[in-house]
Image (cartoon, rainbow, N blue to C red; front, side, top):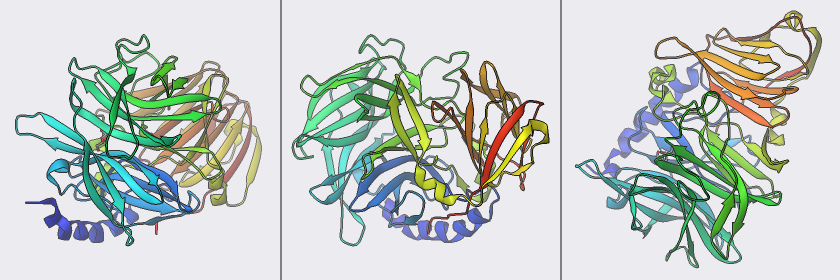
Length: 468
Ligand code: FRU
């Protein structure tokens, strides 16, 4: 059966699924989420011809990782999104097991998608083609087929092209696994997006002195930021450490000097990009005003995702909020984009001992907390402990109820927290760190502050803002 013959089933899944998903108390009030099925990586994030476009890995047919299509949303302001026609589905030989992640570029005024065609064989092996598709006047995308086969020396795990233009040339970074099963980031160049020349490995195991850096690096993204270059990518197989890399796979960043002439990236150490329970495969784009904006998948593959209760309502996963990135003092700072402030309703304030603070409705809420060690209880389903060592975020495993903890170590003086039905994003010290997590409280969910320390609290309930 070709995938195209599944159109009627997709239509039915969306018609039946959307009202079910929207009626689920865990369905986000203002974050992007699938109306049915499984969503994972953000793809093709771009500001193009006056609008932001955000594509996404989407299996519209089931809450599992089969049948990856590219869904498509667009927005003028990163807050109000609308549905666009389904962009890609796996209906060709070269992408028959999934139109995997990739990026979008403006090629002389034509919105062009660069994605991975994933092909699996019966013996368990696979290959991957880097492919193009171009936008048509009706908003659909026409596939232009593969432009890059598997490079020599790598397994079938070569994917997730992030393409950009610099001084009239095109550049592509790819996530890869070499035949020794080491994770790498590869660089290619092209003058026309069609013919690509290899420029070697710019990061990964054995590059820049890195060792034990995992068996596969996914979803690379390389960009200039505040006088440096930043490479974001998702290494699989990094050893867990007592206080970081505790998720099945982490998302990481490193900064350094990228040399276009020599095709080298002289970078420093790896850092975890988000210290929460759910964050993976982020992608960035540059806004019209020059800001570097990131959106991540608030999920992690191969962990406890299949135990999330929203599957019973026919949908699973959501994106993070859009975040502005800055590089300062050797650190990568993330803050919610300022446009999100338009979701705020009336501001409320409170000052005094934490345990006397008002109990807040966590349904769709933003709050800021200043200068105090305090515990925050999220509807009895998640707990934030703030002490002189830093932050600990705790919740029960969906598998066995065991308490799981994530850490952000360091001095904390300010927290800004965004809550949306089943997610919490905690911005630490105005963006020095972030912890993004899903949780599944009974609604109406309440946030309670505990302890005797004095706190200064500002809070807003946030308007609902659904994709139209
Ligand atoms: C990351 C990832 C990518 C791949 C996509 C498939 O979550 O595994 O490497 O392209 O998801 O959905």
